[in-house]
Image 1: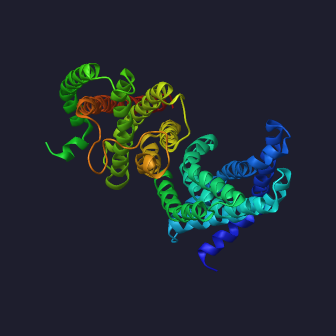
Image 2: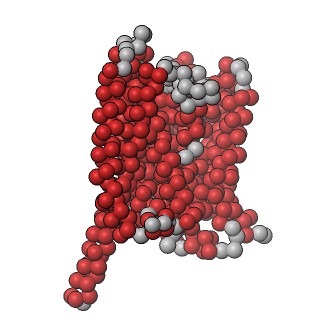
Image 3: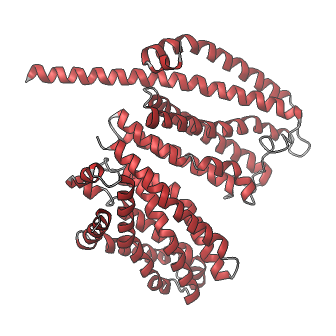
Length: 221
Length: 246
């Protein structure tokens, strides 16, 4: 098995087994979506209108929450140093870790969306639109969040700083994700914002690993 | 005196000690000229005297983006060339850039109330400048979060370069989206559409604010170099005290 595949397999196994990284994210997603009607009031029509936005915000915050475990656990037990010093290019190793993190933490959010759509009185079209945009957008959130996670890896209380650094970079993904969902629901041009959303994900696949690798190399002395 | 001589902090300190009084004087003179020209500029036929906020709002907005550009160059200097003073330049520029962005947002907001009827609007230009302000604050937070200045420099350099993507977004936001903020009137294809009676004071004020940034930046760099020397001396003192008591 190649080094990258082994790295992905290891990360997924750790995320699913220890500390419940995957399920904690979904639980937080559920909590946020449940809190919204308490704040907005039980008006179902309002919840339907705001549904895509609430789901996207919940997914954004949930993926932010699980981001610091991307590098922190490896840094604490020393395996991050081994990865940085290894023969595999660090950029590919970062990309592999981000992919594993998305499979373990981002994909469950997408799978949980239909259930949560019921709580917000969304119909089948709206829910599938939101799920599709989340499927295209959560990789962007993970890969750009990886940059912040790499910058904050050496800070022990870096959790909040991580959020402050990552959120401005995630705003375009949020804007186009919600725009695509709303377009699908109202029947307007879905292709344009969805294409831009996919483009943002593709760009983050390239920029994220390079920036994260540069941060790790320079930050870990 | 070559560019590489400037990499020596001591030479930099002595050079800027001689240069700063002249820069400060030039800044003061240009600001005085610019403010006078702004005061005697004619009133706009639609906006009246309120148009004169432009002479502060536009230069501070230009400076807010220029400072991030300067920090990006400094970031390249840190990561690529390991220039000794690049991280000092980047750290010193961040609070100044944040202040200029804040001033641009506040003066724009005060201008918007009489002109548009609202202090704030979530259009593309205002939103992207607000995000720039948040990124400045995040960068300053990152600088202060890491104890060792040179390690903080490398992390901040990566964040600065990643954040530089925001600059073209801000510049072209009024072209790409339907915004309340007016489109480009100076830096556009086909030349400026601003009348000379307004364009000249605007450019003088822009030059004055740029010199102000340069003066403040060099002074802040001097302070940062001295601060690091103090820190190094404190570390040596603490190490010696430890050795003596051990």
